[in-house]
Image 1 (cartoon, rainbow, N blue to C red):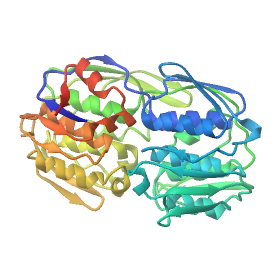
Image 2 (cartoon, rainbow, N blue to C red):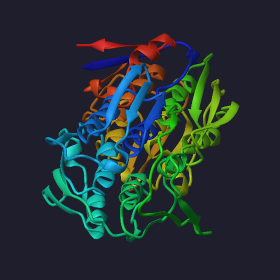
Image 3 (cartoon, rainbow, N blue to C red):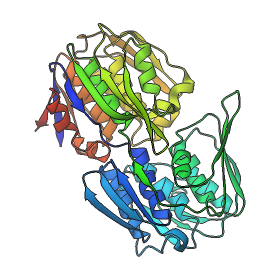
Image 4 (cartoon, rainbow, N blue to C red):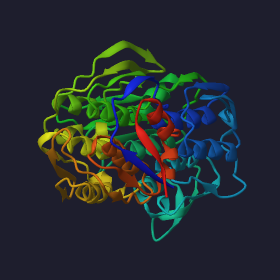
Amino acid sequence: MRLVARPSGPIRGRVRPPGDKSISHRALLLGALAEGVTEIDGLLEGEDVLCTAAAMRAFGAEVARHALGRWRVTGRGSRGFAQPAGSIDFGNSGTGVRLTMGAASTFPIRATYTGDSSLSGRPMRRILDPLAQMGARWEARDDGLLPATVHGGDLKAIDYASPHASAQIKSAVLLAGLGAEGVTTVTEPRASRDHTERMLRAFGVAVEETETREGIHTARVAGGARLAAQRVVVPADPSSAAFLIAAAMIRPGSDLRLDDVCMNHLRTGFFETVHDMGGILPVEDYRVETEEPIGDFIVRPPAGLRGTAPPESRAASMIDEYPILSALAAFAEGETTLSGAAELRVKESDRIALMVEGLRACGVDAEERSDGLVVHGRGMGGVPGGATVRTHGDHRIAMSFLILGLGAQSPVVVEDAEMIATSFPGFADLMRSLGADISETA
């Protein structure tokens, strides 16, 4: 499917962005591990999360949908995960497969994990190697690519120094540590998303965290932990909200309210960077649900945006927002330098390369760096557009260039747009309801 975005009028309305993808995966996974029935409100029903729901069923948990965003998980508790009958297909979901590998390795079962062509090209040794240090065994294609089979059970705790600030690595090891003998420790060069730690606490697990002055972060869990089922409220995804915010920022006269957005301080890097660029995002009705802070945003465009250079220390808190931030930078005055994001090379695509390629195709000067990119903004109304952009099936690349097309001088077409449903089902319909001109094209 190809979508085209045409220059549009103001973005106006009040909406709740889709449920947070990271938290949705964890709600299903911890619910499946817990004793009792976990009720989930606000679950993201994108393809990635639905793959995790199917995986939990394959491991023997009862997972049922009762209404839009409302799900119920009857966990395995003390019985542990059951041996799956066949291989488990995670589609395009890196978070789902990596966290599940960690959680399932606790139990004396064998599980084979598969995925689509994109997921099958993404590195899994960053998860498989620490699991092997804990006592799991694995076989994988090309020494670390899917399909991979993991033999679990009888794990021993480890002190693991992660080379990356990656919530997926940290979470996989911590989840494996729940059933390991001893205390499992994960140290990161700087703190990554802490949704796993927060939700574990909500389910009754003691998690110890420390951080040095230099920003080195450590999390610990003791083996033998038991999870008690909970009611989980999934807030709106800040990564999805970023696309709506960017659209409103580049269309004069916009007036947009976003409800229930996750305000976890490890996810707010995009909001902080928009502020640095001259945007103002007032937050109302700040509150906490299931250990996660939540707020409502008011979005109105500034007179203009300025280029910026956010600190590398902010990268982990906006790693998924780099594509839309790059598109927003095209409308700023001056240069925007984005760095500290080498992880973008091994996401659903090489996001650095694709963003630079797409920006250049749309008439915006941009340069690749090993860990980021430089965008030479053309100011409001100065982006030519008029290109067809390759996405390599990457949902965030597709959405970023559709948003860019709303503010460009000429329409922008994106390829393989069906992949948007992995994280933002109904994206085009929602954008149209707010005033955006997005439609299918031959």
